[in-house]
Image (cartoon, rainbow, N blue to C red; front, top):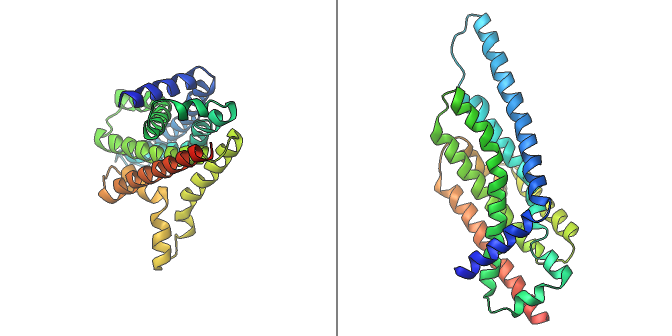
Length: 255
């Protein structure tokens, strides 16, 4: 575990030693802030119109603002995660430092977990930018806390799943652009699978729909923790890290 934490710390420091971490956090904060402004503006406008028409029933802050905002955040993550993982192993292979890792007295699984955890911590730092806007709602409104925490749990599990996929893809090439592009394509495909099977009730359609990351985030966005959704994300993380381990072993044999 000590080696995992050391590699995780090294990986996280490498992100913040370059502009990539600051750019990702600024980009996500800007996009999320714009979405927050739009959602709150529309809610205020609709509430004002309802009052003018004599309808005094207040809107639910969770349903009107938080739920669509965090769903929007999961979509934005599709563009950010490839930028986080594209250099995980591809940069090591390009600069030749991968040989140092493979000859170091550290287990392959420690290296893989350390790099994945470093990417996860950066992803959490990016997500933290959204908490500034959510905190404003709690300061001036009365949203329900539990659905917010469950939705963030869904974002973390979904992010961990996509980061594991990106980490595996990064082991297959030495080109960061290729790693980022393929990761984005795979993440986008997993996001669109629910669209492709929206009106397909066959067994094949059900299986394809189950593989969509959007399908499993829906319950989290509603504040509901379903074990099958959590198991899906955790299984995908384990499977992709297992593939990464096998790919890393093949690098040893080729070396």
